[in-house]
Length: 279
Image (cartoon, rainbow, N blue to C red; front, side, top):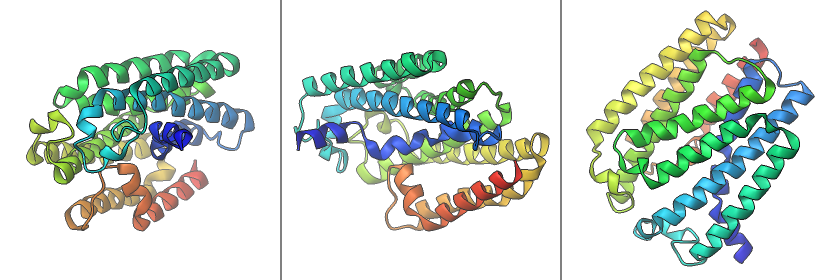
């Protein structure tokens, strides 16, 4: 049972966020090149470990707030299944494994991983209490993942696509904050007392518009063959809005929302098929 709690402390349900590391591999037309795929997979595993370290550290910092949250109170630290010393031990072991993988297999992403860790540690200690800045920092973490994907296979990714990753991340994390207010009020995260629905919805609307514009610019200027995927992008964003305003249950986790909604999964699958056939 204790091993299960250690495992849950790393938030395995959130590991899927790191699949965006494969974006450069796909758009660089290297998905079916074995060497490039292996290097990207190593990066993917590295960021699973790095993000797990951040999740553990964040749980240590937020344990008292998590105890007041209707869902987070079930996390291993919040429900006292594990102690803080257990969490720190797991951080040390995970960090050791992460460094072993990077130093033994490919050191080129070490710099990005270090920046990722430092940025998110500072976020957990300080930035998470700054309105708007907290959203920006988390969105930048996703951009760093994509940059790591470009570095590992030594390719350049379009600036339009990178900006699109940032704005889409901003869209999703802002909706997450909105869901937190809706589900748990202000109990679990002090900064939610500063936010309100109007501010978050403005950020959501602007980031959604920017995401669609930046993606459209990418298709027109860099990859015209993908222009037919633009309607799918519109549908994806509209579906997410629909789930918030009409679904009886709106999850805090964008991962759970996306992977539990069949229409969004269909849109993602169609988009991926068209991309693979046209790049």
